[in-house]
View 1: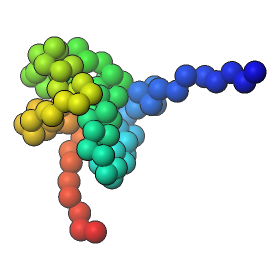
View 2: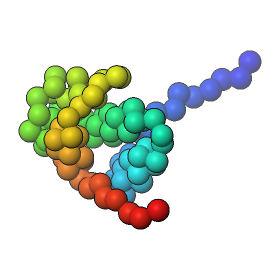
View 3: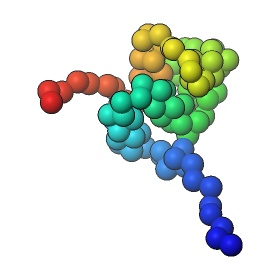
View 4: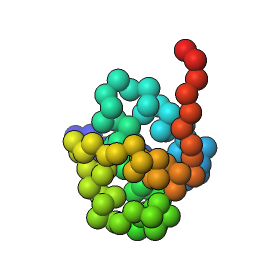
Length: 93
């Protein structure tokens, strides 16, 4: 029987460049929930408590905003992204 090791992307999100690349790839996915999942993964990598402090959001609010099926406000996402040390931008196709 083959044994597989559990993979967690959060284990590899250890600097702003990697985080930015990961979030950029998530933005490319046609499923909008993928971006929220990616933000939550990055938040876990950084630590939810620290991210809540850095973003000015309550820890419980942060968990709620990044839960499956959540529809967080634009303002909330921008606070979280800025607290993660990255910025979003648009470019021509």
